[in-house]
Image 1 (cartoon, helix red, strand yellow):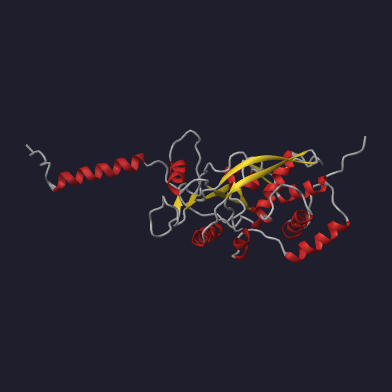
Image 2: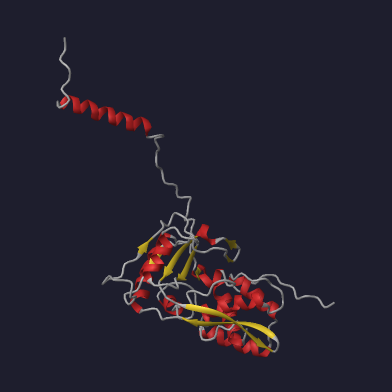
Length: 304
């Protein structure tokens, strides 16, 4: 008669370990052979920059926990002077993996792409801005103005943001300069962030995003003064660049919002939404530089 196996014996522990390994192997599912194809690219084609409108602690809470209006972003960028940020060194907060969809863009459009959450990376930059929309009247036309308080973005915050964006662009080379956009660019009827204080031109000087050439703007300014384009032509040009705008031939409310968003990005000294010579010249210069002067086929409305 054999003696029972001592539970403390080495043989007993070894048998149990083998049973465990066999169980894991059986439950592991399919075995895969990884051969990485060269016929692929990133699904990410857009980078959307936001401002939080809250200090760091509340921004982190809203972006990372359940709440009444669930929202998230891939990254959160704080700044040292924030009274709720108690670290002595800036850290990037990664909230959603780049391969997963964050809920940051909402109802959005850029060019022919809508619902940009599916194809974009979102970065929230901590900035405690506040805005109120105001209606003003010019020659009986209702114009939309913003009464905003936008704190400036500290240089240290922009420096670490530039590092982050450069790493993202290496991982996702399909993001073109014109596709590094503001939240306001892709949702002009609803949003104004990251606002007029955001240093887009500085980012361009450091290899990020799009910007115009002054000489080209001057050339177009002279042309526009001689031959002013119609509202419909300007709306076509804005749509060709990427902005969501309904081409109506009338500078209506949605048109004002779209041009205001453009000005917030490229001419922040005046973002009233009024289309002036400088706004039109900058728009044409950008289209020439990045869109090859392509413009949507827009016909002038016929006279009845």
